[in-house]
Image (cartoon, rainbow, N blue to C red; front, side, top):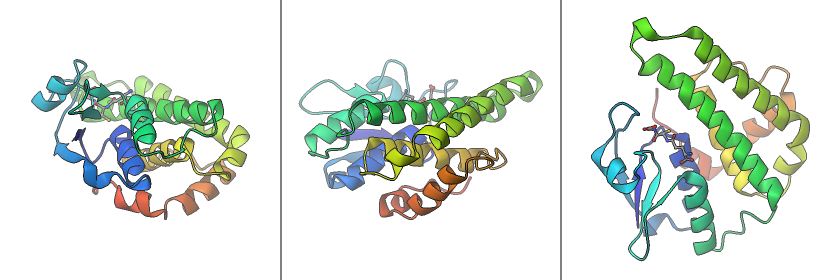
Length: 200
Ligand SMILES: N[C@@H](CCC(=O)N[C@@H](CS)C(=O)NCC(=O)O)C(=O)O
């Protein structure tokens, strides 16, 4: 198997964490690419018609893409048990992925869009989604995060870390003390440490 990969993508990081946690890291070749919506890497485009990463090229079946699909496949393959929480696990993953979508969109606005076309209103709206989703996690999902480790933990850990990485002024910890406390401890998990993005 070959993973189309970039070290700063929070979606790729979900897959990498799952590989660490389920002991499958050695079974995947890592193919690093630099890809953006405006300049798609050839390997990303060849693996996924949408040109997005992660994508998992398999020897025994079609290439998989979208981190949720890849994570569920690798969980089955490695007997990870990371979806034992059923719909709760999946809602948490979807919420975390939504944080990533919004934060990545805000990142593209300031890093990729030409300066004279950038719009603060877009960034504010996307970071508002991040705040709202963090508030929802803090209000409703702390008991799950304190429970058995699953895909929700991986996704939320990657999402919050990405927000810190690209949007250090977002202040998501404000009013979300329980979530901040959970994350402070979760960050020391070996799979989080092993998949940290390089300095911005
Ligand atoms: N829903 C997708 C989102 C993947 C995604 O947006 N990846 C970004 C990198 S963080 C990407 O490939 N961007 C390039 C593009 O949009 O063309 C997933 O979960 O895999």
